[in-house]
Length: 339
Ligand code: SAM
Ligand code: SF4
Ligand code: SF4
Image 1 (tube, protein in one colour):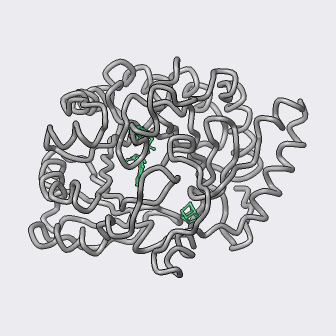
Image 2 (tube, rainbow, N blue to C red):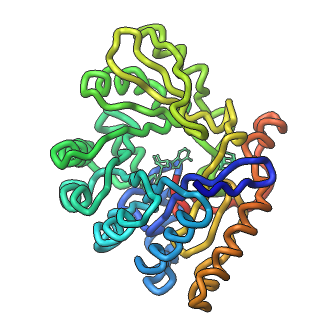
């Protein structure tokens, strides 16, 4: 396998592709409705990478940079028309071992079967509360929780592997940690708790609103004893824990309280075709302009290799060194580059 190392000896293995900046939700921690309102200038179709352009780039990332995993994200990826056609193209790329998608789940009843047939293997469905009112409030669109349950059901019927993501915020939904654990333990889906992160500049992040990995572990362990597990592969984002009663596992993604930059093997392709080598970057590198300007793939590969081999990013480690204070910098919004 090709291994390109960055300045901190990290290989590139995982490419996250945001296919749209649009979403049918307005989650308060991601696209708050007061900022992403009716006049918000979302990207126009011609500003997005086409499926052919995404495929071309993904092939080069797989062949020449060592990418083996793709994750489709957004915005809400299922808002992008004909997404199964893209999945079908990506699933045929030699070297790609795993294709997953992160989604809010509401459109899965329409697409789960088609996605599975196209070659999608796994979905991560985001759900922050089992309380119908709190869920409505958090998604910013008064969307009913039943729509997500229908999405989970559709994914299950289609034979997609399922994980659930829950972003935990102090004073907002920390009381949902245990009910969520109880429910998904019984349902047999791995639940992953995500610390509220300071992505972008819109979500009014504050360290005091983070429920830390330690707090989450304590809460769960007091009711359902859990034991830590080693990572299954280098660069696994979530720390994993098994329920001691044998009822499966949970994961915790602790970007704030326990940074994992040292093993970060991820790059991100934004909806408008920029390359980001860190979730918290201020700006990306305009790959769209490059690929629209040349038919020579070798030119593009050379640039991709240069970008990765010069990479030094470790934002979360640096945030930690500043005792959790954010840097006063402009950061790209989550809806452009996905989670
Ligand atoms: N719309 C899809 C969804 O919500 O699953 C995919 C895109 S969303 C940006 C990807 C993941 O990022 C979701 O699981 C979401 O909960 C998470 N996320 C968004 N903003 C976040 C934040 N400020 N802190 C932590 N996780 C966040
Ligand atoms: Fe949309 Fe996902 Fe962001 Fe929520 S987290 S606003 S569903 S992109
Ligand atoms: Fe990777 Fe940047 Fe997150 Fe660190 S802060 S784990 S380098 S994306």
